[in-house]
Amino acid sequence: MNLDLNRTNHHRFDLKDGKLVVAHILVAFIALLIGGIAGLLQTMVKSGTVKLPYGIGYYELLTAHGILMAIVFTTYFIIGFLYSGVSYTLGGKLLPIVHRMSWLGFAFMTAGTVLGVIMVLTGKASVLYTFYAPLKASPYFYIGLALLVVGSWISGWGIFWQYKYWKQTHQGKLTPLFAFMSVVTFLMWQIATIGVAAEVLIQLIPWSFGWVETINVMLSRTLFWYFGHPLVYFWLMPAYICWYVIIPKIIGGKIYSDALARLSFILLLLFSIPVGFHHQLMEPGISSFWKYLQVVLTFMVVIPSLMTAFSLFATFELNGRAKGAKGLFGWVKVMPWKDVRFFAPFMGMLIFIPAGAGGLINASNQMNAVVHNTLWVTGHFHLTVATSVALTFFGITYWLLPVVTGRVLTPRMNKLGIIQTIIWCVGMFFMSGAMHLVGLFGAPRRTAFTTYEGNADAAAWMPYYVFMAIGGTVLFIGVLLMVYNVFALLRAPKGVEEYPLGEAMESAEATPAYLDHWRLWISLSVLLILVAYTIPLMDMITSTTPGSKGFIT
Ligand code: HAS
Ligand code: HEM
Ligand code: CU
Image (tube, rainbow, N blue to C red; front, side):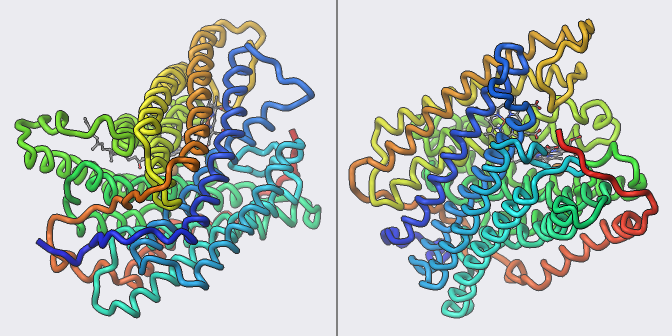
C-alpha cells in the first residue's frame, strides 16, 4: 500500500489559519439565520397565514432569501472549508502572503455583502437573486455584487498561490487530492464569474446609473446563465470534496480511486460552463440548434455525478466487505449511523438521487416546458443546494470547527447534530415534496399569496401551500438548532480533533500524470465555451431588437 498519497501525517491544524476559517463559517451561518427568517415568512405569505407588515414586498423578501442563502451562505462556507483543507494538506500552514490575501478577499466580500443586503432590505433592490434585467436595482446593489465577486477572486488566487508554492517545493509529487479539487473548483469559478462580471460592469451598472437608457435583456440573461449554471456546481464541488475525501476516512474505509476522483473534477471543469442554455430553453431569441447543443453538453456534465455515485457505492461496499458484511446492501449495517460527520452528508447523498433525477427532467426540453417557472423548479433546488449541499456543509461543520479551533466534538453536540439532520430531512420532505407536486399542477414560482380572483384551479393549490408552510416551519427550527450548534461548537472543551482526510486504495503511480496538465484542461474548457457560446452571443450583440428600459417593482 502506498504511503505518500494524501498522507495524513496528523499534524495539528494551524490555529492562526483557523481564525480565518472560523470567520468565514460564522458569516455563512449568520446568513443562514437571516435567510431562514425570510424563507419561513415566504411560506407563511404564500399559504395566506401571514401578511407582510411595514410595506415589505414579497420580492424584497425573496431577494434577501435567495442572496443570503444561495450566494452568501454558500460562498463563505466554501471558502472557509477549502482554505482549511488547503492549509492542512499544502504545507500545514498558509504562506503569510496567502493568509493576507484571504483576509483581503474576506474584507471585499463582506463589504459587498453588507452593501448589497442593505440595498435589498431597504427595498432598493427587489430584483431576486438572479437580478434579471429589465428589473432594475439601485447601482449600489450591483456594486455590492461586484465587490463580492472580486473578493472571491482574491481568495481563489490565494489558493492558486499556495498550490504553486507547494508544487515548486514538492517537485514530482502528486498534489494532495483535497488541494487538487480545491484548485479545480476555483479555476471553474474563475472562468464562470467572467460572465457575471461582464454583465454587471458593462450592462447593469451603467444602465442603473442612467448613463445609458436601455439594456439588451437577452444578452444579460445569457451572460447571467453562463455564470448561473456553473454557480450550482461551485456549490456542489465542495460537497463532493467531502464525499470523496472526508467520508471514506470517517467510515474507516478508503477512497475507492484517486484517479477517478480527479477525472470527475476535470470533467466538471470542462462541462459545467457551456450549458447555461438549459435555463433558457423556453426563451425566444436563441435558436433551437444552440439549445440542443447545450442540452447535449448538460447530459455530459451528468457523467461526473454518476461517476461520483459509483465511486461512493464502491467505497461503501468495499468498506462493508472488509468488515465482514455480505450481499449487495450488507454495508448498510456497518456504517457509523450515529456519527453526525457521516450521517448528515450521507442524507445529503441519498437525497441527491431524486434531486439529480429532477435535474434530468428539467434538462429535457419537452419536460422543461411543463416545469419551467413552476414551483417544481423551486422544489428541485431545495433538494440539491438546500439539502444535498447544505446538509453536507452542516456535517462538515461538526468536525471542522473543533479542528480549526483546537477543540473536540462532544457526544452531546454529535447528538444535537443527528437531531438537526433529521429535522432538516423531515422539513424538506414536506416543503420540497409539496413544491414538486404543486409545480406539476402549474403553480408558479416567485409569487405571493393570491387567489387569482377565485379561480378554481388555483384554489386547488392551497393545501400544498399549507404543507409547504408546515415544512418551512420545521426547517426554520432546523436553522435555529444549527445556528445554536455552531456557537456551541465554538465553546466546546479544548482538545485535539483530527482532520479527517481519506487515503486512496491504490498507489500514487496509479494516478496518471496528465490529470495535472492545467494548460490542457483550461484550453479545452475555453474551447468548449467558445463552441457553445460564440455564435449565439454574436447574434445577441448584433441583434436589432430594441433594448429595454428598467422596471422597478
Ligand atoms: Fe439544477 C434549475 C438541470 C443539478 C441547482 N438547478 C436549477 C436551479 C438551481 C439548481 C438553483 O436543465 C434554479 C435556478 C433558477 O433560480 O432559475 N440540475 C440540472 C441537472 C443537474 C442539476 C441536469 N441543480 C443541480 C445541482 C444544483 C442545482 C447539483 C445545486 C447544487 N437545473 C437543471 C435545469 C434547470 C435547473 C434544466 C432549469 C429549470 C428551469 O426551467 O428553470 C445534474 O447535474 C444532476 C446530476 C446528478 C445525479 C445524481 C447522482 C447521485 C449521487 C448520489 C449517490 C448516493 C449515494 C448514497 C452513493 C445524476 C452522486 C446511496 C445510498 C443508498 C442507501 C442508496
Ligand atoms: C426560494 C423557503 C432554505 C435557496 C424559496 C421559496 C420558499 C423558500 C418558500 C420560494 C418562493 C417562491 O418562489 O415564491 C425556504 C425555507 C428554508 C429555505 C423555509 C429553510 C428555512 C434555503 C436554503 C437555500 C435556499 C438553505 C440555499 C442554500 C433558495 C433559492 C430560492 C429559494 C435560491 C429562489 C429565489 C428566487 O426564486 O429568486 N425558499 N428555503 N433556500 N430558496 Fe429557500
Ligand atoms: Cu443548470
